[in-house]
Amino acid sequence: MPFAGMSEDKRLEVAESTRQEMETLAGRLRDLIAAQPPLDLLGYIYGQRLLTSLPKSEASQKEHGLSDTLVDDTQLALEYLHATLASTSQVDNLSLDETACAELFELITRLKAAAMMHAMATSAGTEDGAFGPDTADMEFQAKSTWVMLRGNRYQVLEGEFYRYVLAPQ
Image 1: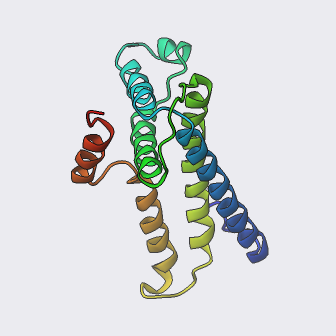
Image 2: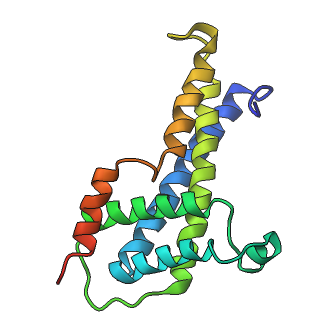
């Protein structure tokens, strides 16, 4: 574990800085999503997902800038899209900004990395608890599993989301 030889003060500093980073990234994600027309953004996100099925070679994937984690990133982007649309008033006359959409995927990747680092930093300091000396490992497993499940659950709510976004206007 990367925090094994780290001082307690340094570990707490990392925990705080990753928390702040996650808040900043999540806020920027929300701003990017709210500034896009929902249906166009949904189409862009799915279009990026479909691109992963086209290139067959690793060289071709690198040429197109496709990530190995694009499926997971797509699910997480859709989760943020859902949360943002559900909690933000709709703005009319928006135009899709593809640069902002590309930034969205970059921020998703950075947010997941920061969340994993935060899970490690906040779990490493747990010396004893319900699982004795294994409490830190159990805490990390719970937190990292929670991070990795983002966008990969609650199919019933996804149906609700699509009915909302794709409803006739």
